[in-house]
Amino acid sequence: MHRGKDAPISKTETLHALEHMLQSPEFEGAPQLRAFLRFVVEATLNGEEDRLKGYTIATGALGRDSSFNPSNDPIVRVEAARLRRRIQAYYAGSGIEQPIRFVIPTGTYAPRIYREPFQKEDDNSQAQEEAPPPSGSHVRSLKRQRLALWGLCAFLALALGSLLYLQFADSGPPLRQHIQKIPVDEKETGPFAPPKLYVENFTTESFTADQLDLANYLVELLKDSSKYLSVVQIMDEPDEQTSIISGSVLLVGGQEILNLRLDTAGSTIPFLRRRIESGHSLQDDPQGTRDALARSIVEILSSLDVSRPVIGRWTKLSPASANEVRWCVVETQFLISSRFATDQDLNNAETCLSDLQENLPNYIPAKISRANLELFKSIISEGPQSQQAFDRAMVLIADVPVDARSLAVFQTFQMLQALARDDKVAVQLMGKQALLPQSFNAPIVADYAQELLVNGQASQASQILEGITPAYLTYPERFDVLLSLAYYSENEFEKAQEVAFRARPRSYPLAWFAQILSAKKANTAGRVAELISDLRKKSPDLYDHPECVLIQQLGYSTLTDKLLADLKNADVGSIGSLADFDSAKHQENCANVF
Image (cartoon, rainbow, N blue to C red; front, side, top):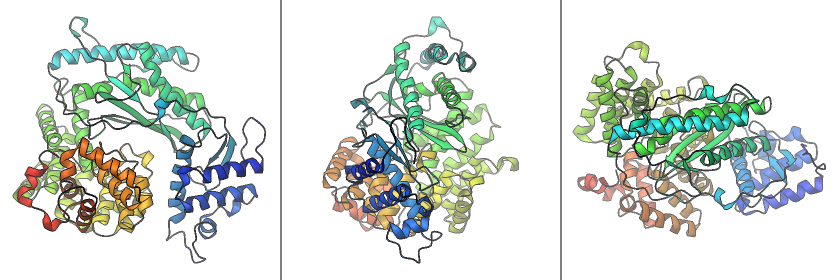
């Protein structure tokens, strides 16, 4: 048993802390998780860690009989993942002041038990209600604002670099070395409104003290930047003009990494997604880990990425600039990977890629991205429009050299081509290939799971999605929503609700329906009423016509039909089945949704 710096933890104290957790609101309605936690803690207290195997937990705590085979039944792994999240929620909620801590590290079922005095966070740490999406427009006067942006970033980089240098001067080379210097024309910087930033608390893979300290340290670093930088506004609460910074800290391959993302209330996809590798672990080099992640944050803040919500996602900064190349290709690929896009997003992506290819005709990723965009249009369109988009994609891809076909963007093309042709064998082969560690491809895995789900194989889909840790993904909403719908299809409504509420409806609108339906089936009526009210207020057209998103995402499937019927019973939408669907009015009804 792990002990803190204070007095040793007695068995009585440990059991008291265990009972407090098991009787908490976070564990209400979760008998399997309570049994799981009690079993592993009591086994540890009794010196029986050798019993903490999948078979003994399944038969001793989860009700499986002696014929249980962990190779065929993933129940222990699934419940362990749920238990880790529930423990984290407990210590962030009703157990925030509890000094005795339980942690079940990834890769083991043996709990770590330690003493950790913990200060309660202030009210600003609570999750904020999502603001309704504004109807933003692109910023005009691009030349003047571009120069202003360069000035902002240069000042931000120098000031924050100086601040961090003072903090870390004794731990390594000056941080100024890690900051990109950008020339500024001081005569034409012009007026510029500093971007508003709201920093959410970072999540952690496990609830260990060291990882929590690192996450809190990085959050405070970002929050304190406003004390030194007049060009950045750190907000106590987000509003419609606020960019929201969030992140997760986890241990991967022996090093700590930070998944960082930047959203706005009105964005359907994040404006920034970065996977930052520290090259160190907290266990071996805690100071080196902090320094490396701090330097990377400086580099991000000194780039234009943080100000992208202000100038617009697709706005050009200069002809064929490196920043434009990255944004055109990356954002197009991201739109396609999420398998959801508004008409405006599609038009913006097409314009940006066309202009880019004009300036850089030999830039292969842009050409493949254009082909992918056409295939995506083919999948979500019908009739002649679908075939025309498919034909355009084939023309674009025809002259892509063979050596470029190992690129991830080309692998996406192959999966989209199989989906457009409804080639189920190819989808299955590529999906299984994408699951292998050496060739893991998250969007293709999601496509494979989605095809299983819409074809009535929810159990297989859930097994695939359960094996993907959302914290390892920079954009986990699609995985969460698909897993929630898989659980929903299997009548596992509590699981469906838990997973659905990890997703952000503003980023992935299908999450609205996963949350409403799972909450209704889980008999949380108050939550259902609140969700429907929010949906009606923030997206009335989507409330009236859920079929627009369901058909684009899930096609004319049996699952879509079932979800439409269940939504109608929840007083969402006007049609109860695909039989009531009027294709002639579909485009008109969905114009405002997309």
